[in-house]
Image (cartoon, rainbow, N blue to C red; front, side, top):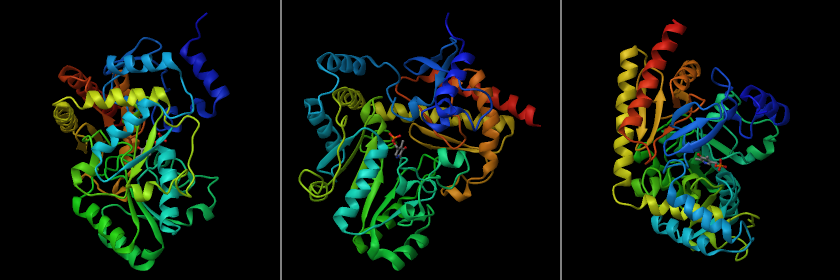
Length: 432
Ligand SMILES: *Cc1c(COP(=O)(O)O)cnc(C)c1O
């Protein structure tokens, strides 16, 4: 007897908190129950009841080539036969390190982890170790994973559940974390004037994409870089989403700013669990075993993950990849904008290449999180199920972005636009 999906969901909830291993997956912020995804090919996914969707989530970013890309599968299969893990440095690890570093000329060394969370966590420790300072600065709406010191005002998962930070994080842990608004030079200058000599690290998503898509001005990012330089603090770009997504060298390449540290993840693991942080030798060589700052990991640099990452980056190197992603993203944005207008729903689309956010509120698309109203996410909560029912898999939170992959094509984009347009009309007439 095959369990029905209702039964499986009951079992999931009986054995895992909320039935999930990561909170937004529980569909707490949207109507309806979460389907179990069973299979993905290219830009399509199927749930275990056989319903087909155009996938605009891409596992929250890593699947930039779509699901089951033959090059990636072959690389993983080859690596798998040789051994799943040895806990020793492997050849693919060196290859992936070199591939990453050649796209981030500001960096000379990379350290692999098993997740983006670990990458930013260890990078914070490294920055403190190198500078001998304790204080760090993050931005309201930016997410850097779920470790204590950055679990303040962190975007989707947190905004979705209305928790400013998490229970179980002692104030002592976050008392060294300063939170600034995005898009505000004045506030940053003020903080540095007050505490500049105590600040070890400024950490920012240069393309904040975890609380909507809050595109920053070049001048703002340059201002931060200058403040850090003037006060001896380190600047870290968290490019776990944007690295190899908006350009091979992420926002570091697009802005021309040279941060002291960069975190990557998601895409560089090709769908396997990976994170990494990188920087100049003089900083990175302070890590154990060369230096006094500790970091380790049983599965860090895992051979399968390294193989998947190398294969993914190789595919992305092919000429025209980013132009194609941008063209598809542009088509989706135009389609969605048209649908909003046709349904007379206030909103706009924020976009950077293949990353898009449906901002369901009046006025200019916000650049800072405090300007993002709650009504948009609330309306999205009703819209989501209508779009899903019409065959497009979108993130189950109005604060999450959509990702286009190289496996999408014009037809699939148009089909995603149609689900959205019809879903809009359905949810508008229901809420009217
Ligand atoms: C996803 C994400 C992380 C955390 O990565 P995990 O692999 O989920 O731990 C960190 N920073 C940013 C910007 C992210 O989007």
